[in-house]
Image (cartoon, rainbow, N blue to C red; front, side, top):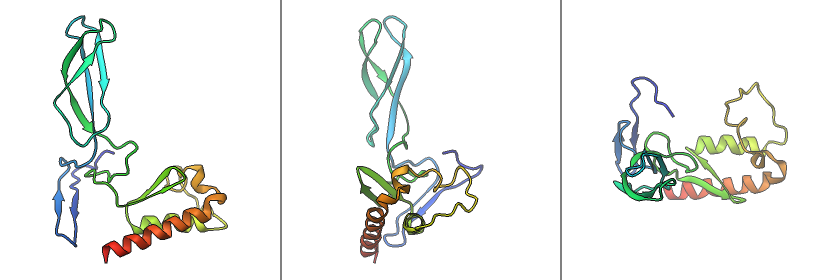
Length: 167
């Protein structure tokens, strides 16, 4: 996710006093890549690591052409793909719930309530939503009326548990 020009992210916890700001401090998952020429035959060596929160400097990679294994330096990048994390700092999101082997996650209670209102509605009006809206891009299993009761029940439980932890 690109940052707007001159954007400065800030995170402050009113409960514990934690404070972090700046766009260079990433607490989330990283994925490492090797994209170099083989030190033996010169063929391009491409390798990617599993996402991790503990980066390391080098990795042994075997060239697919000459089968020589050598140590290469890894370049690390922010990883956001399938992990429910905040896009600015990489913090794990608190509000997440497993439903039918899927994870629904939320940035805050307003986000959770918005989705719960949509899912629980018997008549869902379009209201001229654009193609990039959250509702338009929900997976079909969330929109399906046969999952309505289970999803609403899980979201109610998630909100209840969250309120207990934060009060």
